[in-house]
Image (cartoon, rainbow, N blue to C red):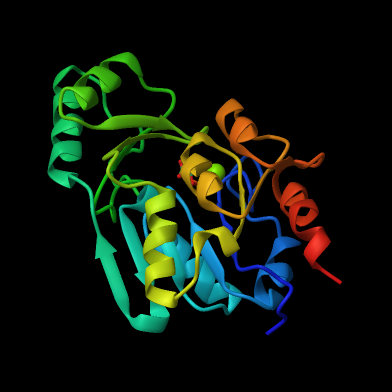
Length: 227
Ligand SMILES: O=C(O)COP(=O)(O)O
Ligand SMILES: [Mg+2]
């Protein structure tokens, strides 16, 4: 293992993907050949980052659902945290107001979630925020979906949980992301890089901002560590 290359924690949507959530194929060999630990940290439900790790051929070290779900294959550890019942109750109350979640009958966005709930960004935000805060939850707008999530967890607590399992310090990590839901892992990482398409919060909390967007931004972010 190359001692100079930092362990990497990287977001998926908007960082490894284009604006339509499609993975940029150029990022795949970089992740596959990264000579240090790679952690995939996402607001998506766990099956998505797990599948990404499998298709990349890298160990499955995953922070999913904005930190609500943490899986470390190396120690066979799964941690779930977050008031899923409250998030589901928000969804029910939101539907009672006549708003559906926006992902159709099968709802692949929520089907495998265990700690939070997501609503499509084309649905009304204000009533969702009111229902969430009445139950001690927050709504994160990641640019891809509204996440009704428990503020006791975030990608930062997820990074800490992975570090506790694997014996790293969060400050050893290079973090790359695009959105408000990356803020806490940015704060803990030794170096935080926002891609050019990042939202205001991510841009503010980053140590460095790339000129390039999306997958090209990720490649620019990691370029200093690639010989
Ligand atoms: O699922 C989302 O809304 C965002 O996912 P991300 O954290 O991988 O960008
Ligand atoms: Mg993102």
